[in-house]
Figure 1 (spheres, each protein chain N blue to C red):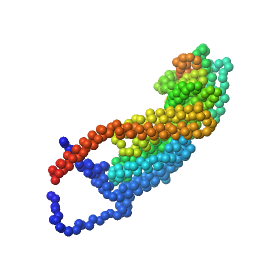
Figure 2 (spheres, rainbow over the protein chains, first blue to last red):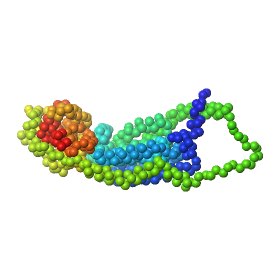
Figure 3 (cartoon, rainbow over the protein chains, first blue to last red):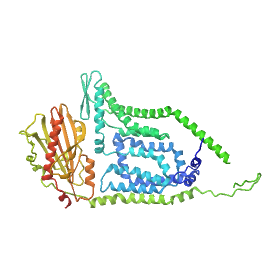
Figure 4 (cartoon, each protein chain N blue to C red):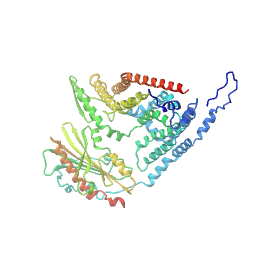
Length: 333
Length: 258
């Protein structure tokens, strides 16, 4: 059994950007100045991006596609609290690269005001700017642990309506066609797709599946991914598990969107609610959110269960290695 | 070498002064990285946006008029097409298209084909730097109840535009009940051709030109049966329209620089 001579020093010092800084940061209460500095800088950052944050808040209130932006602060706080021990362990004095990243982000922010007038990229520069602040005040490893929170921030920034409409057009058309295909096979039901509208005939009744959104067939896509990110990062996971979640995010979002349309269609055909009533849309959206959450939780559970033997084996190896190291250390002593 | 304290020794350890939290915070707040970030952000919060908006006003590009109005478009320049005896007239207001400079033509092939029921040519021209690049047909037609399928890009040859030919244009199938159509459109922005509105936004924002204009040129063929024939017809219409517009109507590269 061989043990790398570097391994104990890495384990003991928790070396990050600077090993000495990391050791110093382990002192009780050492995280408080870093937290205060970060909060001060994030407050100033919010002042720089005040217009973009205001637009995001208004969109979250007015447009259900971006309503998850209202829970984003709580979700980010939950992720940070769940990782507080990793964050405090990873704390260093920060890096000058953070200042450069912040400078670069503010440069991009300026360029999206003039000469290029792009509202969405302008708002998105908030994310690298926040990353720069964290890197400057807390160091690289804290930044790595903050990536999920930054991802939630990114997903909460609303995309412009014209750009979003152009982006989702293929998804929307495919989803509506698939929903028409499935609902058309229900007994006594015939469906037609007119543009973004699903029109049905069931017995003597004709009607429309009122999805109630401008982009009827492709809503809440970002919300499903938001749920996925929250479920994936609420626990500290191995990198391959994160990759699996990332690969599953888009298919799960499309599937949940399809089932939302399908549920709304089934409600419209069989429950026959008032087309202007938001109840069927609310039910369909709620079902799809619950489904997205369940699928992502299931993916996480499967990964932790199916590969538990490998994890055990790895743990055993690590314990054996650690025992070997202890023996070596005892021999030296 | 390790030193050992004899058993029973009561020698007190030297007192280590624990830094107070307040001292630690004060020292931390004086760190160069924090101060740099704080100054950078404070200055940006106060002055960055006003400064960039001021620059945008100072260096705003200017509108440039068409060399020849679109209302004076000569249909004879479209050699393979003609206006039918009883053309369909669509009522369009400037508010609908966001500009006073637009052209909507109902055409037929010359000689007429039974495979194509109707051919439409739609051109809009924008030159106000504050103009927004309009919705693209795949978005607009859907909102009018049309099903849009098979979105793709196709090359369109056009003479008279030099090395910019062939231009890459967006193509889609339209379904309106029993009616089927093929639509091909392209943007022209300051003499360059794009199939995507984001590319147009990038082009009109790029510094260099004193003047700015952009135009959307779309051709639609409503057809029965084979979509391939309709696609060829609509590409030919777009090709001839691009040649005519570049030759007679749109500002030249020299106009844009002067």
